[in-house]
Amino acid sequence: MSTLSARNRRKTPAERAAEIALAARQIALTEGLAAVTVRAVAARVGVAPALVAHYQPSMNVLVASTFGAIVAAEIDEVATELGACRTSVHALAALIDTLLGPERSTVTAVWLDAWSLGRRNPALAAEVGRQMDAWQKFLVDLLEEGVTRDEYAVDDAPALAWQLLGIIDGLTAHATVRYGDARTQRPLVRTIVEHELALPAGTLAP
Amino acid sequence: MSTLSARNRRKTPAERAAEIALAARQIALTEGLAAVTVRAVAARVGVAPALVAHYQPSMNVLVASTFGAIVAAEIDEVATELGACRTSVHALAALIDTLLGPERSTVTAVWLDAWSLGRRNPALAAEVGRQMDAWQKFLVDLLEEGVTRDEYAVDDAPALAWQLLGIIDGLTAHATVRYGDARTQRPLVRTIVEHELALPAGTLAP
DNA sequence: CCAGTTGTTGATCACTTGGTCAATAAGAGC
DNA sequence: GCTCTTATTGACCAAGTGATCAACAACTGG
Image (cartoon, rainbow over the protein chains, first blue to last red):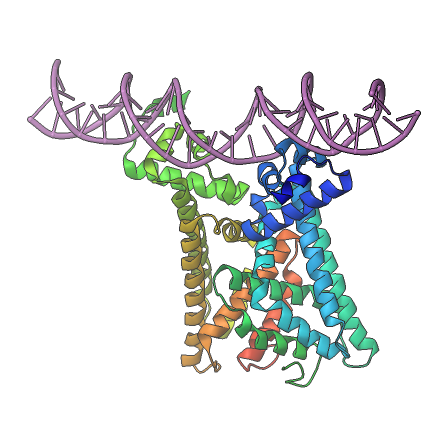
């Protein structure tokens, strides 16, 4: 076989670490954060289980960093997608559209796993806190950008950001667990945001 | 010791089943749904692990029924608490106050566990669906009671019930995972409900 | 008081988990 | 070529999981 040439090749620590991290991310997204185990990651990389343990101080931190990487990638992805919007109002509308879209269910499942596993995994709990802060900061920046552009006024951007994140997470969680479609929840979120920003009704409509 | 008289006493299946169910509920509330294991339950009841397995077809269904019992008890508790309200508007205000209260964090943690574990436990997933439906039905009944009393009008009570549950679950989940205090989220939920029911601003305020 | 029913137990199995450690072998530098 | 570093492995261990089954013993009906 042509792949035989790659057999038994020794890789640099950086390469291996990247491979392991990638495998862990894929497992987490397809089978859940709880399925990220030494043996599962090792099997996916095609390597002995001991090697995974060798590259990671403990499984708890691998799970935590895997979660962090997945969420950080999602934030980046959404950020670049929203970068094309010329106004903050457009960005907000696009954000609602994206975050309540059906393709987010896999990441939402990872969030649910993290919330649950975080009670027994301190490293994961810390990472959950970091990523929630990152999302909130992202939303605060987005909200305040609109304020400086005089598109609307907001009383307490940090608090409003937390509230909106809570609402969105709850609706997407429900949609992931039970209701296949979160699309129907979008109008409600649009109305809430319009009301909180004192925007005319329908401003955020597509 | 005086308790020696109870040693080695044989109990009726109903008694044992009740003991096991109670122990499972206590473990779930204090250590999480994932801590409900054969041995943990047996140890708490003070009985051999095999006996727990004898009374339960499988651990998956014990976890599922434990979750169901906890949530059902919560619904009953909230229902009786709201029974004292004379108007539906008062009941809604009380509901928001109760559901976003800080003492609910233990039950919320159980919900988070169930959402996560449900993906690997079909019996639990089914029970999660049942209890979500039960909560929605409860809210629909509450909303429609107010309509028949001409306190307000509601367009689509079932949809609104789902939306409100999603919002409340998201905010309480955030509060449980990260911020200890969900109290600050209450005004937002009150505003949303007032808006959706076309009630004057401040109607649901305490 | 004795036999039958059945609640209850101890022992044990097969499996999975995270983690350790000496031994191996691939590659780098001389 | 050789030696030295180190990535990599196989073989483990201890702990925990759900589940099964023959044996035991506490009641119950006769």
